[in-house]
Image 1: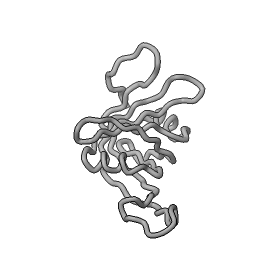
Image 2: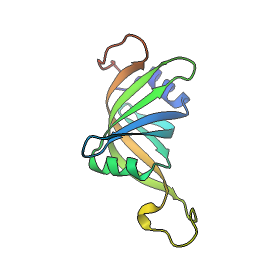
Image 3: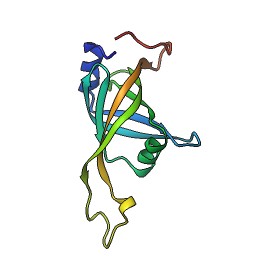
Image 4: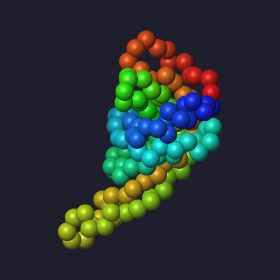
Length: 132
């Protein structure tokens, strides 16, 4: 599904916008970094995601990821499902005193399965999936 051209584009970018929704349909945006295409169907990225993003993903594994070129208003939107998430690092000592386990900040990697790849731009385009 992810062509070599799309793979190269994704991996050259430093960040992607990650859109998740909660159980009530309220959207939330976050950034993902360190993008890497694992194979034709899977991408991994990470960030110090806030609790809202992580809660949303717990409630709804469907996420949209937008990867944009800095030099032009073009890119790709990936419609994905989260297949695996894991903590890479935990932030200890962010606040003085004891911390509640739910408030710990974690560098989280998310492995996602790409369902569709769409063009993402500010000009005329369709929302039809691109061939890979």
